[in-house]
Length: 118
Image 1 (cartoon, rainbow, N blue to C red):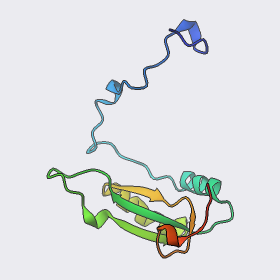
Image 2 (tube, rainbow, N blue to C red):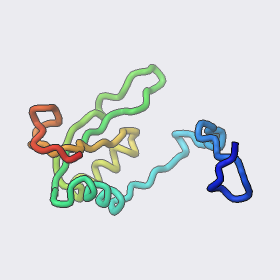
Image 3 (cartoon, rainbow, N blue to C red):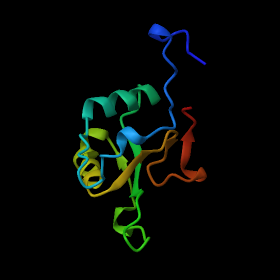
């Protein structure tokens, strides 16, 4: 079946075929942390907020299958103040996540939520 939106009646791309990424390894791929893009994302969540709650954790397992506990942290603050730390954690292999809802700055559990943003 072809996708009529594509030129020349070409078949729709197979989104499950990741073979084009086979030459990328985690040891060679270099991520670029983009402060402006991150700020635009957070502004879309809440244009009036100046602080957010961020969580980092090891989203890859090491050779032994254990996650690195030192990469699991929660911090609250302005993106500009935390950006260097977030970028360093990301380069160390941590996933970077933001709590979508507004928190009290002391955690990210149900009791810490002050306002639902999305």
